[in-house]
Image (cartoon, rainbow over all chains, first blue to last red; front, side):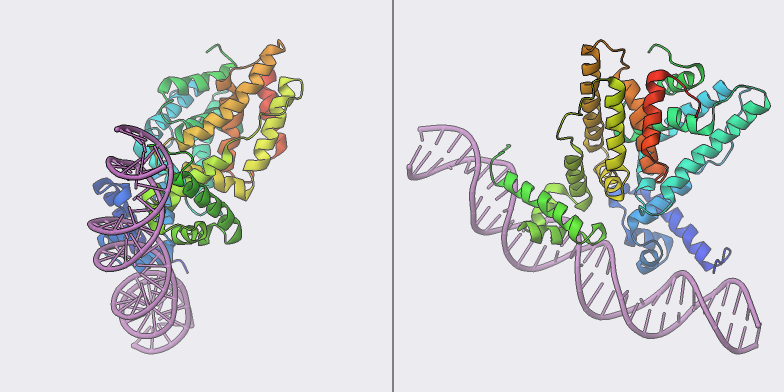
Length: 184
Length: 184
DNA sequence: CAGCTTAAAGCAAAGTTCTTGCTTCACGAG
DNA sequence: CTCGTGAAGCAAGAACTTTGCTTTAAGCTG
């Protein structure tokens, strides 16, 4: 039974907060379940029973963190919207802390939906921008194309080629998506 | 000091083998350092000192596993080569065991180069195909374009949208890369 | 080839984390 | 108000991890 306002919700909140705080204070490698439990004012067994292990908990916190809190800002034109969004995406995700969040999100249980939720968040944001473009009568690609041509390449570099990532690269991807191939 | 033929090498070999065997026999969730150590005939402290923890060891084994052992087969034409390679990539990587290997590879120490090595392996294979195409006088994209337009989208789906992945999708990506946008 | 040097492995004890059965608590329903 | 139920607390035992010291063996030197 879901008890949104009850003790369970308070515990979840306290534990998530403890993870975020301790991650800043002591760093990832020192983070342990007993440590989080103490900070959150619960017993370790509560965490083990509810999340299973530290990875699962971190994955939960990461997905929570990656959820966008505002719609992407509008710049009056699809290319500017996408450009700005991709820029911000890189800014947030390519830092060590951003990469850690993405990795954590991926580390949850393989059959869970944590990873899928990350992609869904991106898709949501993109849909908002595409809908605005359609309303303005602009020619717009579909969500899948944006995921394949812009999000996927950025994510690939974040995960597999850290370092090879700049705002210029994001701009290039958006331009190639909207205008077709360009010389690099 | 590296002692390639010595005891260190034998231990590494034994431990890697133990991991691979036990992964099949008992499954990932039952895999522990002491278990691997026993099977490999070493003490747990050897593994802890050398790899740090189970994640790092699994990451090592995964990267090893992902290393291609043969050059991509030649089909006489770039589009066929890429098509075949992408098809095989999806076949190997989209299964639960393939996804596990990729996730494990990503799970190594963030500042290590395990993830980068995965990407380098793919780049190597692609370079071989592109070089063959150039030799035949075909028009060929550069490696970056193949990584961005074919590898990255496949990897994105493997990691973030498991299920949305078929050989047809791989074909589509290759076609769009070589022939420009098509209607989906 | 014998002896030396040294990186890595073995061992064992101490410390920490993880699991689990049982008890207690508190929200929500009747 | 009382009851039912799912979640949290507690505590003991098991398992895993860390660490200082000892031993082994690969590679170098004479």
